[in-house]
Image (cartoon, rainbow, N blue to C red; front, side, top):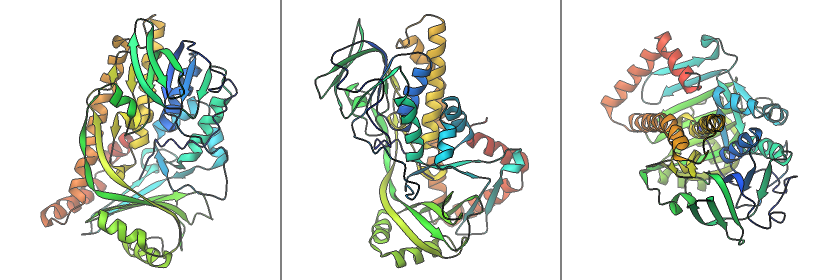
Amino acid sequence: MTESNHHQADANCDASSATDSDIKSDTGSDVIVIGAGMVGAAAALGCARQGLQVVLVEAFEPNTEFNPGFVNNRVSALTRASENLLVDLGIWPDMKRMRVEPYTDMHVWDASGKGSIHFDAAEIAEPSLGHIVENHVTQLALWKALQQHEKVSTVCPDKVVDVDRDGSGSKVRLASGLTLTASLVVVADGKKSAVRDMLAIETSGWLYDQHAIVATITTEKGHQHTAWQRFMEKGPLALLPLGHNNDKSCSIVWSTSPQQAEQLMAQDEQAFCAALTEASEGVLGNVIKVEDRGVFPLELKHAKTYIREGFVLVGDAAHAIHPLAGQGVNLGFLDVIALLEVISNARSQQRDIGGMHTLRKFERERKGSNITMLAAMDGFKRLFSNDDMLLSKMRNTGLSFVDNLGPLKQFFVRYAMGLD
């Protein structure tokens, strides 16, 4: 499964409140948000809904139209916790009007044995396990809400060239020559964050020996509102249900070696469909069409601190994770939930929202949880993406054991959904 905090935002930079042509000088906002991907846009909207004056800075000119006939190849498996945030931000109904696909089941199995596990929303008395949503659907809904909010100004396209902090607040200097000042700067400019580097925040992590192929496919059989994931020696393959083409469309995330990824990307459509049918063991029948193939390298990255006085990292700027469990953007949305809570508490206590007292609370809330999830996904990657016979036996036994142990399986589901 996959996530993206990509900045090709599906919305218009010309927000109704202001554009960069409207902001002529340093006006002193409450919050500056750098990066208008899903996480940054959610943070901006959440702050504005608390009554804070927000300036949102985005480097790329976005696409503003939703085309029902086009299915984006980058999707996210949004958890219930993420859904609740988007409901609170008032954009979930708009997303549903565009396209979201609930999935009620998840089936995971190992290619090297008979181990498998089946998750069913009914087992935990929930209507679904989550929703598969194209990233541009979430992005566009967020931007439409930002356009309509009187507390939001946008600066786009523009990029940060320098940051500083002094007695008047946090300062952000842009390539256009504009300098902005605010009590707090939220850094959400992705895993290659330039602002994180400007703040001299180091990261730890590594590149995986895997690339992920993403695409939209059409299958012979319907997806049954089920997310399918098969673990293979070179990496997992996920088939994620889409609400398109009579339930015979899926988004795929196929993690494999860089060499195999290169070979698969070079194949024509017929050969790729045949390879994908074989890799999925024909669980949805033959793959009969593939569109919009893309590929990207996988890595783990974690910032050694999330905070500097007046600055806070969220989303991929703070942590990048392997996509095998689809937790990337969900971790970013959990960051937003925690940040909005500490900002609200600080304001109620008349504390500086950019002060270290406030931001340390956010870091304590999120850093441990994020490290736990990063470590768990790294462990799963190493456990499942290999051909060691002993590990193969262990993981097949483990899958079957958990599948037959109801309370443990329910705990895993609820944790993954952000309910526990």
